[in-house]
Length: 541
Image (cartoon, rainbow, N blue to C red; front, top):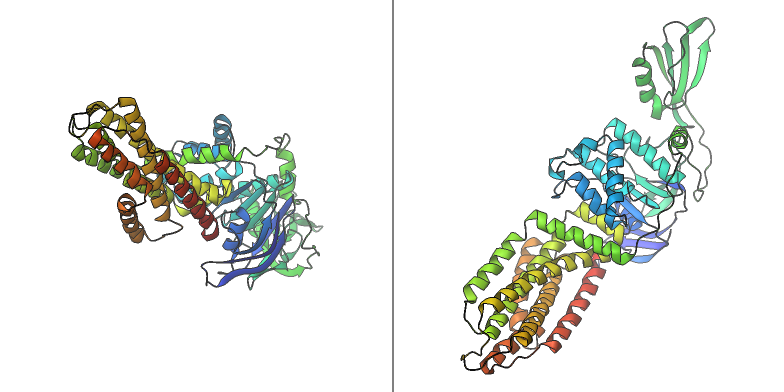
């Protein structure tokens, strides 16, 4: 993956967060991004993950990518296992394999007993384990971690360290940001520092250099040291006292080493502690791709005896279809569909009565679908918490993720609109307005369904234009949706007005006008709006 001359700013006249940034990410590389608060670390990670697009420059060669945000939202109406299955499908896994991998990783992070627990009931730490799991079950070629260790307990942090080493050992690239400078100090890391909107080579803290600590301890007689001491310390024995030892390790591992000594059975007694000068760091070329080394790699080799073969990326359409199913499930479980459904049913109940002329009722039912579709699309675009939306956008790209939201809302609106039209066909009389001319039922049904489709498509366009990334404020979005739906229904030249008017005016003479031309216009408008808003979603994030 290569970044050339990449810049990123928010807004047409916003301050440049990144500018003139060049970076190459070869395979089998562990990359640490450093920098102060506000330096643009998260912005860079979002560019690497494909969540945002660069304002200038190019990003090429992005592989299959997974992303772990700093704060994963618990406000999703799924169980942990249910969410992981959805994300596995989005990444191209079959349902059974996604469920099995999700359970496997939850067990590794000590959260298997929470698989059936609703996400809203999980603690912050367990929610973060779910966030890490959704990224690892996909076995990505590029893993982007934004403070992914935050909120995890000690055992889970160590497991994540091991998982990172495993991904690098399998040839993947891992890019991470973490507030702890000792994070992954036992592995070979390529480090970059963000300053002034661009990257500079930095020296990563590794197990072989940095501040060192000497620990003096006494054991119960000439006992052997506990096995597997953290940090691989150097050991010096006191010839005058076989029970005494001096251990030297990096400051990054000193706390873990002290804990291992005092909790051993039998315990060791700490008799001295001293800070030593830092060892000179080895020179590591910034573009090098060193293999994982140190204790984590040794543990990886021991555990990873049978790696899975590389999984080819699934077809984009399959991933988009899986994400659309996820969006529909999210809408259904959130129950936010209840208000537009009740309003739609109330409008039909007030405006349509049994025995009324068929074409008049079909026109009324089609017109009611337009605001319904705008409302549902707006809900699908805005309902997901930002961090969860970023995770999905990383998997399929922000444009495809936005299109999936539009398709989910449009599909629900079409289903309800067809149900409404079917009800009209059952209870209305197939006659003209004056009850003097019979109306052919099948052509009328076709005209009514096409009018419903026309209004649903234009409603989806209105909903897309009145939600993020075009309108981001909730109050303005709601007002714009109502006004936009009304204007599309009453404005001359609107395909929706043409389709509805064709049904109502045809009812006067008993003539069925199939709205093929209005439907074509609605399709064209909706496709253009979807393309524009999808592109904006990639640029604005």
